[in-house]
Image (cartoon, rainbow, N blue to C red; front, side, top):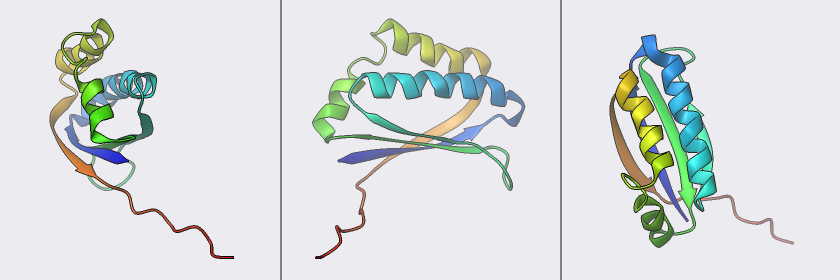
Length: 106
């Protein structure tokens, strides 16, 4: 499994637009073979930071999903929310592999 962690700097005055953008991407990741673990929005502390985490079974599956960017109308529409609203100032993607708790020993 590979997990993508997206670290966003957002415009705090445009949280509603960011939430709309996020809901679209949760749907798209889940629809195209991934598992979206959610967006994590400011609650206390810095008001301009948000995170998204989603996983794909492997890098090849993620690359299939990425081929839809800029081509699939739903992907284009989701990106248009971000672009037209200016809710995202910048973002950075990092790929990680999870270390999950081992199964209990009998």
